[in-house]
Length: 591
Image (cartoon, rainbow, N blue to C red; front, side, top):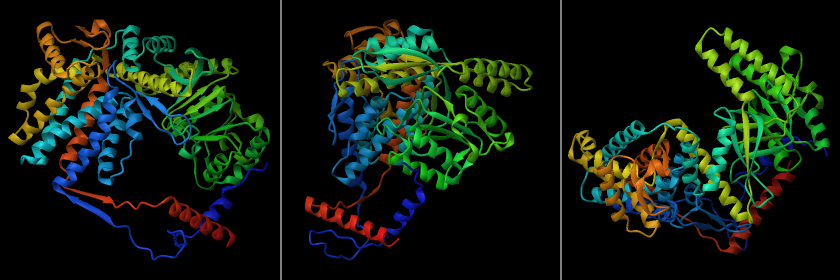
């Protein structure tokens, strides 16, 4: 099979004119083109539509909160339905028929996504708080409160609360705290134990990845590996669209400091790989233009399994990182300064790895153990460089390189009886891993919504004193009231009246001190630190900040512009599809 260039495909696309006639009925009648009309809503109508959309997503997500939270079933066009307990996954799946309500749904999805990307967990808490702030704020705006001042009050209060959470957070004391965080985030004692075991083994310098197992049980393996803070150059190189990662088994590795933009430079080596049917992982200064188009086309056609990333670091440090990767994988460092050009690369110059996992922002290379001596020699060399370094910054970077080369990788192999259960468990593991990272970064606070519930009382006077007028105080009051929403929802999901649990949590905290609250798993009031019911402070902070940000913007909305949907029958959809296919075909013939 010959390696095909992207030029042919690009020419075909260019041949299909954007001004080809459009057909929208069964008889393929030609129609006049016109700009799509928009619907414009103002004031109360616009805000109410947004709130309806927000409530529909929040109501679907909030049933998953806490140890007694329920699951949500997601329909799939292909394959079995998915049963999940992950807030951001549920939120992303919801698309509403009404365009105005759908805008509200998209806004709350943004809250969940932001919490997920910043802290990796706390998406359900963020969603619940957004709903509480928006619903409280809408009533205030309707009553005549200035929305801009209201928004400022909400944001000021959120900032004060976030600073206080960071101040009272306790640092992680050891592996037991990490185990408790992972157990709460995953909802499983066994998952918490496995994650704690992984972190204990690889230490702070290592990485932990989630993989699928062919067995019914969860297992853990430890491998030496290398982590890079660079992701794929194009999302079209991703295999797993749901998790947005590209995973390669036993790939060949090309390491170069050159910019790859001319496809002819890499065609010789790629054609050899097509014949050997081996995947290739490319690390270069950049991959763009014609070369990137060719890689994408051949990846999508199944001709060649390829993933490319940009080289980490900058300047001289970039070359050092590239040499580290080349040594770890056994690849030849391709650079003009050493007399090797891209078009002269042969198969024996490519490195090897056991597995490479590439996400949007990071890459993990699991080495195959063939280069242990070379890696040890490289680490010794970097240590000598660190000792001779003139600045603390150079020493710090050298230490990071040593950790990257010498750090281990824990591979958690997730097993399940069905595909549906497997997907759910993988999402839980990913949440738990992100929570553990967040806990190590900013510390831990009492869980179960107790931290925010207690702050509703203890921080009230301080927050109100920071506001400059009555409208801002109303906004701050709305946020303070929303702080109790997560605690009440945890209780509601456990079958207990939320207001009763909230009052008891606030009372017991005043009586016995900060750290006491309600353990929904065992239905007891206790010291949450001792019981292991804890949350990462970063997750709580992000929940407050993100919910206040989006909710405040919704409240200041005065106009909403949306598309007017056009609903087609199945026959019309088929006719339109046929017409588009015919137009593309005519464009191909005109080449």
